Amino acid sequence: MRLARRVEQLPPYLFAGISRLIAQQRSRGVDVISFGIGDPDLPTPRHIIESLQRAAELPANHRYPESDGLPALRQAIARWYGRRHGVALDPDAEVVPLIGSKEGIAHLPLCLIDPGDVALITDPGYPVYEIGTMFAGGETVHVPLREEDGWLPRLDEIPADAARRARVLWLNYPNNPTGAVADRAFFERAVRWAREHDVLIAHDLAYADVTYDGYVAPSLLEVDGARDVAIEFNSLSKSFNMTGWRVGMAVGNRTVIDALARVKSNLDSGIPQAIQQMAITALDGPLDELKRHNEVYAARRDRAVVVLRQLGLRVEPPRASLYVWARLPAGERSSADYAQRLIEATGVVVTPGRSYGEAGEGYIRLSLTIADARLDEGLRRLAAFATGAPAL
Image (tube, rainbow, N blue to C red; front, side, top):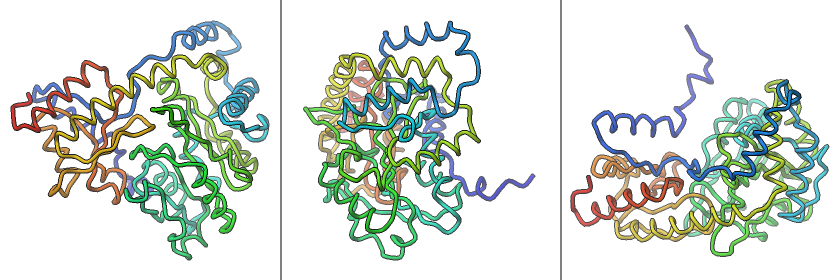
């Protein structure tokens, strides 16, 4: 049977390969500890779960939802943006709920990209930006991120031809995988660049509320005029530990939001209504749990940084995200080879930086989303590896 070329060209999803590696080691009896996937181990706050349980009892929530979401959820998203970012959104025209932000990120290129059009995608970066572009028949032009620039793109170095053909520029701050952050001044420059080149900015803000050391992540939409040239994706997955419930949002430019809502109406039936109700509870509720969760992640970050430096990796404590991004020791060239040696010697899984693009080569990423006891055991093994002692 012949498959479509787009599927034949589709690489395995990044974490599918990591899962296979873990399975191989476990089949050999290795107690594997994975720092690979950024899936919070801390539970969804209790008051949010209880609201889901109540909503699940209502027969009205047993039927098809609307793909554009309950008006009450769109209103709650608008209230959240008002409180958190000082951004006033029209819930009927500038907000669309998503079945997790990944779904909307993958669908957005269908709204913007025709065959031959270009998407500008930062490298290293989240792989779904490029996969969605490929499905839409577009061409990816990578915009390299460099450590010496704080992992911010040099917008003025984007080739003129690529800028002319581009329909969208993807940004993601706080950043996955690097943990880098962007300030308002950078977003102001990005908005000016997008206006000059008639390019939409799609900003992925999934890690806005996983922050440390007093840092507060801004929204791109806080910049004057941003909604003329930008939309923003956000998610309850990381901030409220709700990865399994699949709730996200896109907000901003009303023309693009309308297009995304129309695409969704033809491809999915929306978020189950009981889950929408729990999302409303999360967005309108107390934020004490977010602060507590971030304190847990910050403590894990600090312990990880100490051990990674013992391994000879160069690493700075990130101010946001669920990840530690570390440069390989001097003399190491391949992040995949280094990660392979670690799992073979210690049973510890890290993600090779090359998995996020060419500019990620020379780095590894560790996720902080494993229980403290397992994290500490993984760090113990890495510390033993650093000294040449047996780790397993």
